[in-house]
Amino acid sequence: MADTRTPRFGWIGLGNMGLAMSKNLQKHLSQNGAPALCYTNRTISRGEPLEALGGTPLTSVAEVVQASDVVFVSISADSVLEGIVTEILESGPISGKIIVDTSTVHPSTSDAASKKIVQAGGLFVAAPVFGATPVAEQGKLLFALGGPSAAIDIIAPYIDGVLARAVIRTGEEAASAATLKTLGNFLTAGMHLIISSAYTVTEKSGMDASVLSSLITENYGPYAASISDRLTSGAYLPPRGAKPISDLELALKDVGHGITCAKDVGVKLDVAELVMELLGEAQSFGAAEQRSLDSTSVYGALRKRAGLEFESDVVKKRDG
Image (cartoon, rainbow, N blue to C red; front, side, top):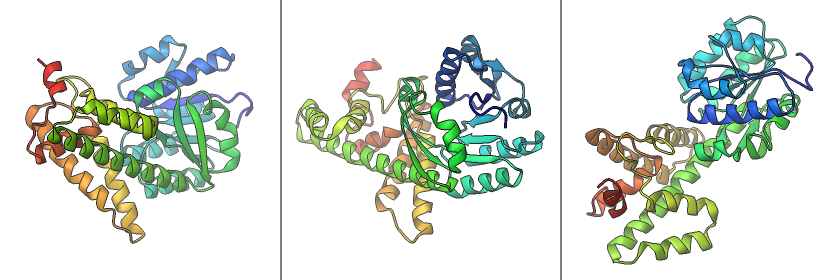
């Protein structure tokens, strides 16, 4: 690898999370006089905000890999990561290069990607993140880092305090970070279910929702409060044509990974399976209404099961 004190960085994948993170990285590189971040994306125009900050657009994965010492990958599905890894391997020599995957994928997918990269002489770090796009924009994500310590030591200064509020090192195996992320998704899905259930009971009981909101905020911490806000603000059902904070389709993938990971070790996640049922019902509602739903839309499905409408009064008022 080139001088590890000032590595050349590349970025592949500019979805909402990828764009937010890459912009923060480019700002940091620019402020410290480091080489500009080069990047690519299937739709290259997605990177215009990054280019405006000094990033360098390239037309292919191969160009980014060969121009970089450290390459971040941010994609939305296991199959896409598998394709990106193939392109990386076909790009040319990757000896000493560090591939950092920030995506949420099944541990077995992460393990397979790591083995292929290592076999070709590279280093692979699984770096799934905790937090939605607004958190990524603030540079306040939580990163789980699994992989060789030598590689993590190089990339950590460009993550901790730049893209993340903190990092958790999970071990030398890439799959360990993916497993932790899967468990985190299970915990989050469980919180969505519990808080949504509490609000449904509150409405059915005729109690003012602000009372429950105060309890959650004062007694259960900022993360529970943020979920509560997504329900009470109507963000669980975004306005027609608007993008969700965290997409329902990704939630289905992530919770599904949790269920299969648990089954692999002989554990049945009943809560996760109930969440999957409710997400499926919410998905059907979204398809019928031709609108995107947030991962917290289990709230709407629970409301319908309880004899309420999917749309809360807040949503109805917002949407006219």
